[in-house]
Image (cartoon, rainbow, N blue to C red; front, side, top):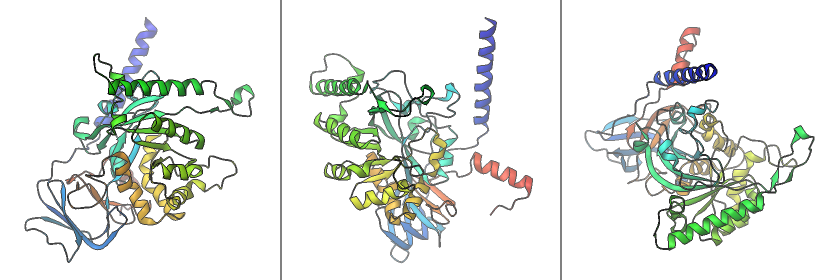
Amino acid sequence: MKNLNIFTLTSILVVGVFTLGLSQTNNIPAPAQSQGIALVGGTLHLGDGSVVEEGTVVFNQGKITAVGSREEVAIPEGYQIYEVDGQEVYPGFFLPGSNMGLVEVSAVRATDDGEETGVFNPNIRSIVAYNTDSELPPTMRYNGILMAQIAPSGGVVAGSSSIVQLDAWNWEDAAYKVDNGMHLYWPNKMMSARWWMGETQARPNENYQPTVDEIQKTMKEGKAFAEGEKKVTNLKLESMAGLFDGSITLFIHTNNATSIIESATIAKDLGVQKVVIVGAEEALLVADFLKSNNIPIVLGDVHALPNRDHEDTVHPYKLPALLHQAGVEFCFGFSGRMTARARNLPFYAGTAVAYGLPYEEGVKALTATSAKILGVDETCGTIAVGKDATLFVSRGDALDMRTNQMEYVFIQGRAAQLEATQQELYKKYSDKYGHQID
């Protein structure tokens, strides 16, 4: 009993200190747009591959009402004008497949809602666990990431993901498109060598085929349930119905070339309408298959080592350009557990540009293509009339960590706060040590 009390007290102290740390953040969501705004004079990267020099963007009530050159666009009387000459204007960047807001500190179990117990959990909804008070969204906003796909992990079928905007009071406010993705983590055919047992080579996964059989069985049951009479309630099977009418996209997480073909083929044969491959390190080896079957991919970390020993050490940097040349549709993603690193997503695109990807294609892969793959391209992803005014202004190139300096951020027309914990700490210690802040 004494040990239990000590453990309980320790847990309370850990969570209490963590909560206290969160309460120190003064990050307040912006109110709805109440006055029309015009951004005048900046270079507009529209997100569809085109650029407008010395352009103007006008938006009101959260929607873009005019886009064009300075001379073409008339600004209504009473609108607030932001002079952004010499600066860069971009659509908000997207972060696909993230556990941001689900996991705060992975070492503190009470703050980890990234995965559920069990192996097949299609009914799990990640959106209801999304924490808008997380320290991470402000750090993403400061690099231009204004939208994200919040996805569960763990097991084989982890559950559904939702699209959120990164300036909200609660998950209901944050939700942009709910439960429109299902996440399937395809098993590995080979298991890593157990070095602690003296193994030097990978070994076959004995559970591979039984797991694949169970995946097929579960999907067949889901399809049969969707097509039959609903005489009983079955949340697991009901949650998969959208896979077969196209309202839910199946995101298959796998890197292996053979598994990409096998998993996508099985899904298509079972009637799944929309398939996306996540990770896809070996996608170039099956580029023809992906292109011919119209299967887009969410790339894993670009800032990574190559998957094969014989590959060029900068192969991950070149991969986006090679996929673009092969005609494979892709967007940038982050596959690591350290979610805080995902704020570097724009610089993944910048590295890809340095290794051959056309600049505006890099921007497109962060904006329009991401929006299309995530199923929200009708309302956001580009700077276009009628779409959400989710965009930002940078003093320089947003894909370059040296010049990516946010000037203004707007999410659905709202002027989102830029100052957060990182900026507060930077200023605090710059004051202490006499460092001059630009």
